Image 1 (cartoon, one colour):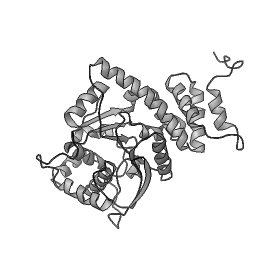
Image 2: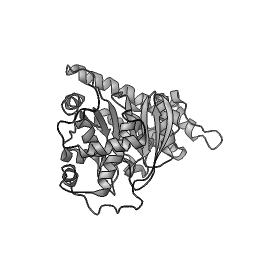
Image 3: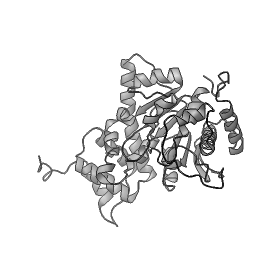
Image 4: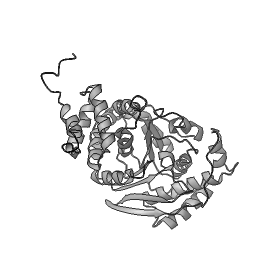
Length: 349
């Protein structure tokens, strides 16, 4: 087994060589090369040592928008095959969502306030499909662990997701269900000591082909790559921000650059800071606090404005407000009306 590739080169070796051939000869993969390479990885046709080398060469170079788009295309093909197979077997129609929401970072300094924005939007008729992973980085509060405490379902299959989104306008599926290979790769962080391109590409997956896509990154330089990759993927409406902790959450203590795609065209929007003084991070987390704030039993200055700011960005991405100022006013009104069961839906069925 150890010597099987001493005579014949492994088919995946060409992609490692393209990335690692030295300062003058190496280059980025083309979109087609990236798609084919990731398709081989997902199909289990690549040796573990090759995956490690491939991921770390990409990490040092930093993945291009074309590479990101190619990786996502391969992953989406595999996910769609499994999704359609599972739903057909269960006798269920295709899952329809209005908004794709990725959650892969976890929170460290502040609560995941964005979950209250998601809860409010779903309550007002917006169908949100969320996907994510947990446990790959220590000392993080991951979405999957918090969702039950705010009354949002974690699903274990596409069939469960279909039923959940029909009943609650929300479904969360872990990456381990979407594509186990990518979940295994994202878990390599503890072994390799570094994040890999998988942490980036998963945010672009949009597994249900929703017409609007929300994304967040931690490192500001990746906003441009995500915006350009979204254009290459044909996403008509998307928004990527530097979110708090890397999650899709507007930090009210700072300004926010939203790099969007609007009707297939790139658009940049600057959102001013809400507070002029920074708020201290939480000393500890109480899993009941989010719902106390939701019910109006407890005030939280930072958290409530994080919810409103995140809502406003999402309303813009959904095309429900004409400008950031109007979006903030609308978000504030929605938050004030969150306990009104008779409030009308935001989206048409």
